[in-house]
Amino acid sequence: MKKTVLVTGATAGFGKAIAQKFAEKGHRLIITGRREDRLKSLKAELIAQDVECIYLSFDVRDNDAVIKAVNSLSDDWKSIDVLVNNAGLASGLDKIQDGNTDNWDKMIDTNVKGLLYVSKAIIPLMVARKSGHIINIGSTAGKEVYEKGNVYCASKHAVDAITKGMRIDLLEHGIKVTQIAPGAAETEFSFVRFDGDTERAKNAYNGYQPMSAEDIALLTVMATELPANLCINDLVVTSLAQANSFYIDRKS
Ligand code: NDP
Ligand code: 8X3
Image (cartoon, rainbow, N blue to C red; front, side):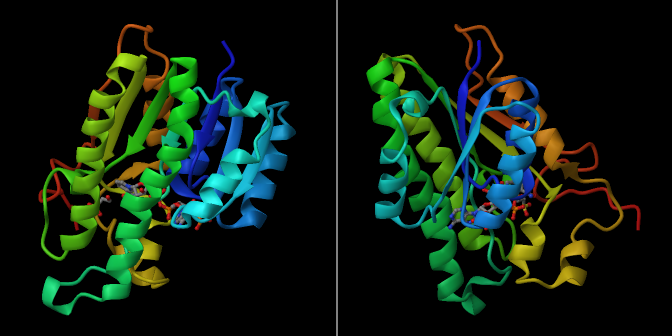
């Protein structure tokens, strides 16, 4: 069955790969993010593959913009079967005493409040149809707190808690809620975390093979392909070189 899938943060990394993987399977895509040029080019790429695709450009931190974007969908596109709450970021890596409050705001506003705003706009549509699947992209940082991870880890612990809360509250409506909690994967994540410092970003993956965006896309699509009666609640996933937030087998 062809599904309508909305992916936040589809301009890069996991979100882009997730959109491409759902498209490969013939589903229809609503891709979202702030960088409209990237949304336009991904839309063109998918449409060239005969995939139905539209884009909505908005900042997940802006609740009015989120509501406006979702309201602008035609009824047909409002029948969202899968919502992938992926948009997010880390900003900085500092001890709490050295932390930058603008970075803290950015992470909490995006990773926690943004995820809530998008969910709040879409959940009533799923409840009305008594069907849907929400996939929240958490992190191993939502399972363990590492040095200098403080606020990023807090934001992902919040995603962990919100996912559990969503699953409980939506139980009676037949809506599946899944968290995928990846360890390190090479995307634009570290480039953003280190504010455009490419050298520092590359070093994060020195001496081991991290996961790729395609790995996470594979698992995200897989989670939506289970029998109707099954729901993956929580999927913690790392590359073979990583045991958890603390242990990475670096060969150099
Ligand atoms: P990228 O930086 O490659 O992609 C992040 C995406 O989020 C972009 O599409 C960006 O779009 C979007 N985004 C960021 N801020 C906003 C905003 N305010 N409004 C709308 N969209 C926004 O990183 P990843 O793909 O790696 O990260 C995706 C998710 O996975 C994040 O939630 C991250 O925390 C999580 N994660 C990443 C891991 C990793 O090691 N890479 C591991 C575990 C979890 P745009 O800038 O165009 O708005
Ligand atoms: C991203 C993975 O280890 O940088 O969520 O926190 S990590």
